[in-house]
Image (tube, rainbow, N blue to C red; front, side, top):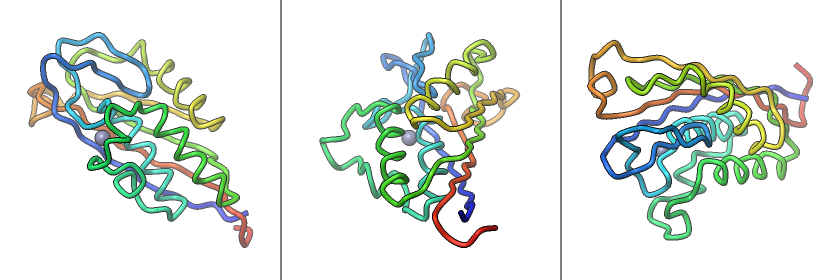
Length: 161
Ligand SMILES: [Zn+2]
């Protein structure tokens, strides 16, 4: 098996009147993510990291925001389909590490739940979620955006490393 690594990043604007979904978990919040989908920045960063590791493009290729099929699509659905893309290539998602950047609310007690929900949607993988604030700086620090980054390792048939 060849082991490959991929990275992902995502950012969504936070606005009133939208739900805040992160890592397939709805987080009670005054503001939620703006987006064509449910705006789950963490799930999107994780999906992009996995697609990157599988050399399979990015979520914009597979779930274009110009396609009404993906209107309000959940992060869990994107992760399920991303895992299918990897499996169809004979690959296996080995591990995911991620960080979500959000000023408020604090996510401390929800990180484990996010990791579990994403692992479930992926059909099994070691998933970790970390959370940080932006110390009041920039769009994230001012509470105007949520961002996330992730790395993923995918095993594919190929030369052993
Ligand atoms: Zn996104």
